[in-house]
Length: 600
Image (cartoon, rainbow, N blue to C red):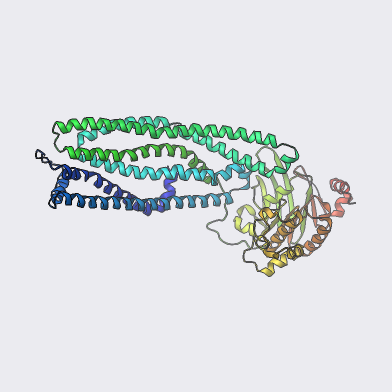
């Protein structure tokens, strides 16, 4: 509840206006019900034996009756009908305006929460996504948010309006007759206890249902992404059986949850009917025994007010049940927003660290790292990359090459040792400043469902068409882009699906070059290129990398033969380093790798 109240704070003024509108709507509803006493007097005539009442409401109604009856019986009925029409219209107007206000509050809170969730997702470290299921994260944005809006915010709306209505109705009932209202209050705890018993297990069941839903989303996403493998292994029937099994368990849990929710309303309605019968019996006894202030016509108005109070009472019990159900979603969203995120900027230090102060651009000193605090990935890594030189990292898969690049960009934090950029520890640098100085071409090429130009300019939104074309030419991408239907304005589809692997790779390289970074990291940048394109790109990169510090990660050793320094990694340790000729002369691990690729 504190989570929801915190998100409602920006809408305090609207909440106040909503409360006022609900109060006015209920007041005019009560006025309509109370006026029934005058309608009965006009219709049947005032009894001569009527005992004067000390109740101010009764006196006000009596005064209204005496004013109406002066117009004549038929005319007063018409005039009374007009009054009732006006009161009922005002009740509906204020009810509509209150609904508009609460709708704006609900949609505003959901909008703010989605913005917070997206911001949090962008700022969480990559280590979070290593342990979290993708479907579980996606569920926070989809099913959890829908459930939160319907169950919590929707129930909060019912809770507020029902509470206000109940308070006003009870206050009027107390004023009309204390004895009869005490009788009602004594029976209300029975309803509360029964409904509380039904709703007790809703939160736990709802939490299980949301977890199962996130697993279903993960399974669906995993299946859609692996359709080629599923079809190639004739595993369609197996995948269908697995999905049906998960879906069957999920449906069974949801049915059990909704049985408890749906039981709350009819049970509370039945108990409300029992209370109405009790009021009729006890109230009739009070009227017949001449209870002071409770006349027959006023008793009918009392009964009408209580009947009007039953729907908000029922809504109140249903709202509590729904909020118990939606609490699990709120907890999941709150837990996600509470995850520790990367410190993107240092609030008290907006200065950009000046480059060019140190001859060594990148340096790793005694760096150790492991992903899960158990299996070490890097062991005592010491590397120095002078400014304007190219460092090549080679080794078998899993030897730690990409991990080193991730640590330099601070996608992960090293456990021991230091990483320095221009002589300053990267751990002390604001992430925004650090990453603005680094251009990365990742091993897994990611393009967005947008135009070619927008993808190239992704890291530099203010780039001109000339800048974009220059970067594309440097990446050997201009020719195939120009041949596309709309050139640089061609939309390439989701994930760049309209392009080949080599074309996607070259656009990714152009995107990195456009930023003109001080440090360029190429992680298998030419892996998807054919031999001819690779040689063309290598020639171009040779010119682009002049005067720029670069780290090249490659399996194809032909791409790193001209590097200023080659570091050979094996199981997270540096086993050799030097220039190509020096390493070949050593006759060690590097020469074996070259011979395996038939490059010597």
